[in-house]
Length: 149
Image 1: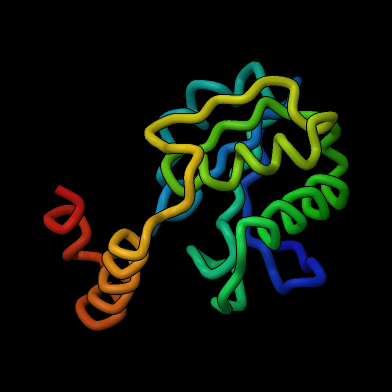
Image 2: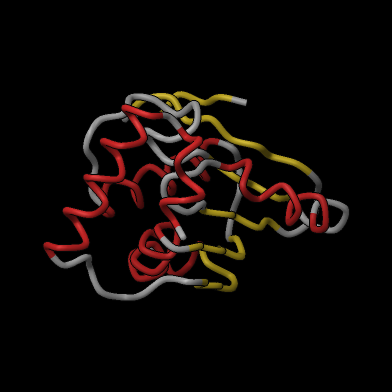
């Protein structure tokens, strides 16, 4: 599904019913990384899994900050009538989930931070991420598994 936000279009999956669970994916993936969790949870919960701006089918792929993404997510949740959620962030998703909780605590029922950290990337880590983006643009996603190991 797609929804238009002030920042662009956001692709997402919204499946099941019950208390909402927001799944925020890792870099450089998209909502499809959550398929096993969606299958396991959607019979008891409303599982919401967006493609973060510039990933998957969410556009445009323009530079953004964590604060921008938090604003996108609160606008997105408002537009799809999702009140508070259990928020799950994996890796980059955790970089977004923690400040989302700090800015919008009333929107977060529970918080799961997996394989992530609370500090920003240092210069070497930023350079490595930019290099990975360049390699993916040049060679495609087939290189991802070897590069992540």
